[in-house]
Image (cartoon, helix red, strand yellow):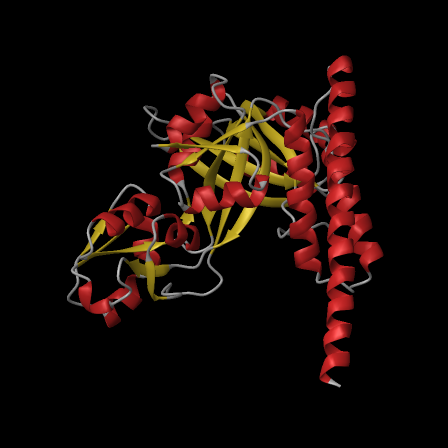
Amino acid sequence: MATENQAQIINVRNRIDTIDDTILNLLKERLKCAQDIGQMKNRENRAKWDPLRERQIYDRLIRDNNGEFPEEALFSIYHEIITTCRLSQRPIEVAYLGPQATFSHLAAVKYFGHSADYRPLETIEDIFHDVERGRVQYGIVPVENSIEGSVTSTLDAFMKFKVKICGEEYLNITHNLVNYSGDIKDIKLIVSHSQPLAQCREWLRNQLPNIPTRSVFSTGQAAQMAHDDHTVAAIASSLAIKTYQLQVVVKGIEDYRGNTTRFVLIGKKSPSKSGRDKTSLLVGLLDRPGALNDTLAILARRNINLTRIESRPVKGEPGKYLFFIDMHGHYTDGVLVEAVERLQESCSSFEWLGSYPLARNSTTYP
């Protein structure tokens, strides 16, 4: 019986090898097809990225799968395949808040896969600057956190630089306490970015009340410090553990579960319509009673779903504010075209920040 079972295992393994060879050959063929399409688009000077086409591929695969292959894994596999094939048409550089292994780095890899060329920069403003000057094609920046709220440096940069939002990504944030040895007794100092320290404040107070904390530039820098000094522990991402050869002391030390950060992708030009899109605006209101209500009424009367509104003070002009507005729909949609025309008439200033595909795990249309 054992011999018969062993023979069956060998037969199945041989079948798996044949399937793997077939998949590999098909992947190479798919890559060649994508490169051919890229050359055709070059001749017509067309954009390489077609969000509608990509969404149709994902929708078709998930529909035809009928739940047999795990859906999240299926999406992850094809996301890597599709982005790799797209990037083969034109390699791109993506700037993120460095150094390596920050949550921004993790969000960038989640969005673009592993085939992009990632460039760590020191500040969020540096990312905006390099995108505006064309030094990189894209940058990815955090814009809001479900616990700590908006990332004000990102909002302020939108008021200063001329870039467009090209996409969004939501990253579930899990904070790990890590150090070189994995032994909690070795910890003399805990370092991290100010937001993770705030998000783990109660845990640190209850579990390590006598260990001082220090805010540093990023979680990646914190992980690097923990690698270099074995008395230092960092609150860092899962990517940092691998990048800096660290050990987990305690997993999931955040005070609240469900901690999510929204990142936006910035570039020089927003993509074409995908069919499930979001539009972002930056508007200034006239100095008169009811100005905000009148602005929101323009959207409400057209049944446009407003997903976010936030004000930021204008630097050097006390009492003056600009409003960031996110809504469902694409800038080219008829109802949004009409609404935008009315907003431009009724607002003291108006800027279209971009229209872009909704993140897969964001709120979708009803």
